Every structure is written in C-alpha cells, then in structure tokens.
Amino acid sequence: MRIHARAAAALLAMVVATTLAGCVVLPPSAPPAPATSSAAPAPTPSASPSPSAAPSSEPSAEADGDGMPVLDAHGCSTEMVAALLDTLATLHVREGFLHPEVLEGTDVACALTRPAEEGEDFATFSVAVVAAGDGVLDRIDAAILATGLEPDPIVWGIYQTGDGTPVAFLDPMPEWASVIAEMTPAPAGAEDWVVVLWYEPVA
Image (cartoon, rainbow, N blue to C red; front, side, top):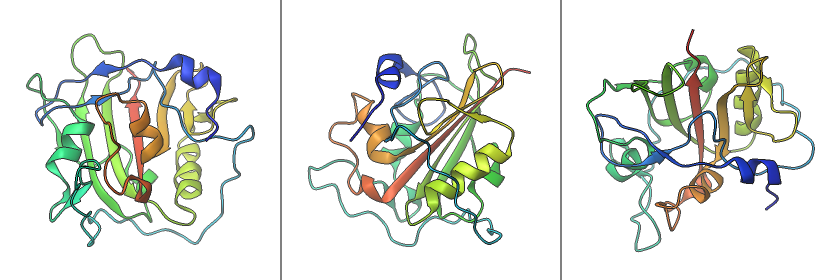
C-alpha cells in the first residue's frame, strides 16, 4: 500500500462529540491516508445512477475477535456507529448525508449528519458507509468533483475548496480505519466498504 508522505504527516486525531456513542473521526485539517498512486484515477463515466439509501441486505459476519462487525440487521452496527461518531456531548444528529447526490447509485449502509460543536472549524459534518464494488470509488469521486470541489493535487481521495480547505474525503474502509488508533484491528469485512466524510465549511 502506497501512502503519500504528505498525507501521513498531516494526520491528526480528534474526538468529535455527538448524541450517538463513542469514536474518533478526522477533522478537515487532518485528512485520512487514502490508498493512492502518484496519479489520480480518472472518473469512470456511468449510466445515470439511482439513489439508494437502503442498507445492504447482507449483514457483516460476527467479529470473532477480528474487529467489530460493520453491519447488523439494521444497517451499520452500534459498534460501527460508535466508530463514526462520538457521544461525549449532546448534539443533534440525523440520518442522511449532507450531499445525498454524492451517494447516488451506491448501496449505503448508513449515513449520518451532525452540526459542528463550538470551536470546530466547519459548519456541518456528514459520514457515510457505502458498499465497495467495481466502479464505486470512481463514481463517488466524479460525484464529489461535480459539486465544485477540487482534487488535492498530490493525494487522491481528498477534495478541497479553491482556497485549499479540505472538505471531503473518500477512502476504502481499511485505509480510513488504519489512521484511527482505537480501531485495531480494523472492522470485520472492512475491505467490503468505503467511507465518505464531508466537512461543510462555515459560510
């Protein structure tokens, strides 16, 4: 796995407070380390996607000591939600992704959005777990770029505003989990999932 040194050097962990229970996610100033090559893959054109917010019908296998299950019968498992959002304070968390068009045509296990807490340098945070598969990374990549964000010139999977503020991150789940010390080992079946993060800038 090739991780660019700039991404590795920029990694900072931060605890985010929410109404759900216990985890660490990365702020806009701390991009996760995506699997990269020196050149960004070109988006793959596809037929008009149709939105899918339904969880995958196949729940993850039990962890068996090899990491938390990603799914249960209701979509993302309690453990997975705890790894996506922390619950140290009372904040309003709702289901859904801030920019649902980014997830159109994908199989969404769960998507959650919360407002920023005092002191955070973004307005709203969204996270989604999406089933991996042929063309999924390219599809989401193209959809994020269609919102007007620009790709990071060095690290694929990081998207920023014109002034260089990181806003969105796209990672295979093993790459995302690898930068979160509390997630050792990675979730069971992590290779079957993709994590999408979105930090909406303050207007």
